Image 1 (cartoon, rainbow, N blue to C red):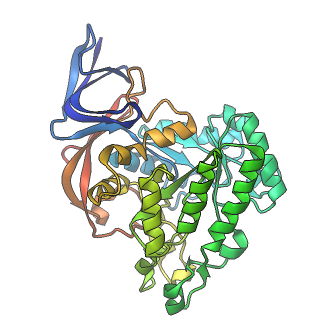
Image 2: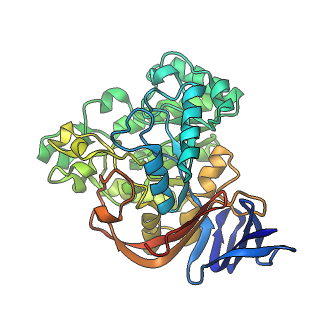
Image 3: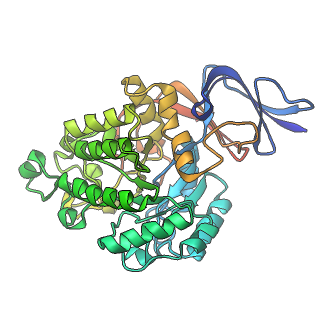
Length: 427
């Protein structure tokens, strides 16, 4: 048999507690050996990873490739290739597509387009309710059979608490985790920035931290009642982090993620009406950012995602209140995780775990780890390579990043998706 050798890299596999310089062998799209060459293996190709880090391919828990429905912003082909360039081998797609991801046909379309793209895997999240309207439950068994590993509200919280309770109970019968957005729709409906002194100075309607706290309070009460495994997406406040910590210590089956930009930016970055810093939930205070960092460091928030939402340039032009929220984050996720290491928020293994082992565990995936026999979804990166966030360096069709002109360290040189090799060593 023939295969690929990744030679002499620093192999970090948080799921298995591995951090050592060694060789990794890949055969037929799977990890075939670590350290010692498998018997009878002929090395057909070789990657020299000396001085570089070899780790499981990143799993981005919230990334919108914009297809189907919003192909004027981006599409599965462009974003799947941008993801691999950024070391992300799996994208988890929320259900707020157009049409909504509430039928098997939409899930199958996404799988088919991703397969045709031949780059990152794309895993769809099924809609919790039909049309994400919050009124009638979706056909969750059908969605599960179509490859959905979870169901969620797609950023459109279910207002009716009884409907949400029934949906959570129904999801539990199929062992599907429920992914919820902690935002009270009435408190946050007309806001575009954090309710605070920056909003006051700019004359903008704010979104109070109570919008997150109130929604979390209700949802956690339902989790305590029904016991469904529930994941809260994109926490943004110190209060929310404290609520989550308390719920976990009570033994509730809950988890959460934070968007990586929330760990660096604050409401001050919206000053000057900076539309690329217009996000949902909004950028909060410095105290909120620091509390999120602490929650990540202590493991209460186990997952960091990009919350990738590419936009065409027109969507970010005009008065801030009229622009569309969201950032393009595939290109910068890995480098920002490494900056958290540089700033002593996490060690390198923990940082990698937040985008590999932790999301894989939530969704029950075989990827996110480098066991022998596991899918060969692998990222090789140079942790010392410096690059600048400029339009020329971004592979996503969306250039709406608040990190433009930042100097970042850490660049992917090779990636494997199911053994398919992508070589970026010369770029």
